[in-house]
Length: 115
Length: 115
Image (cartoon, rainbow over the protein chains, first blue to last red):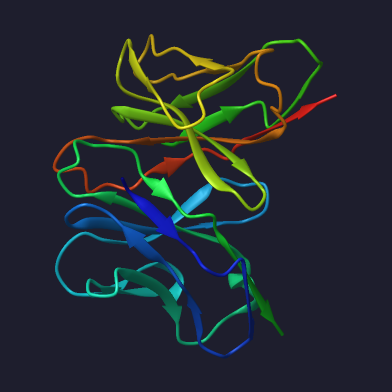
């Protein structure tokens, strides 16, 4: 079975400081990993994905994520946070070669960037 | 202008009433999904469909029904058997070409409230 854990319900960071939103996963075999962002009363927007290749993935709006196979983690990072980054962030996973099974999402982490 | 359209944006349901949420996409995507979002619970899969006239139950299908008569459309009916339907409902789609390394495109959601 596939699962995703986002251990922090809320992350607070000061504007200009680096931010990290944590994600760990569990799948059989190799994973496809995704990060999405959601603004209030909106759908989810794609930020970045890891399929294969470099462990550091760069995405939209200056975000990046680091895939760590040994720790089964895919933490989202940004060097300098903006107030406009305040939103709800979701990590998602599915297993490679799992026959197009649906993505499994974490419970989300609310990021609050304080000016 | 390609995308996924969910309607209505807000929907109110009386006790014992069935309501149908619309989801239409013009992205020529093969697969479509319905998720339910509740505070602190993330996204939970209700139903999904990978081809026309076929669909599968997700983790929380009880009290819901779907149809997939056209590739572009995947309506969700919330029946009176769903005892706690108040939630934010998200529709998503994805192509199924290749090894499944595509993320999802999401609609902007429907907020359903029982009155």
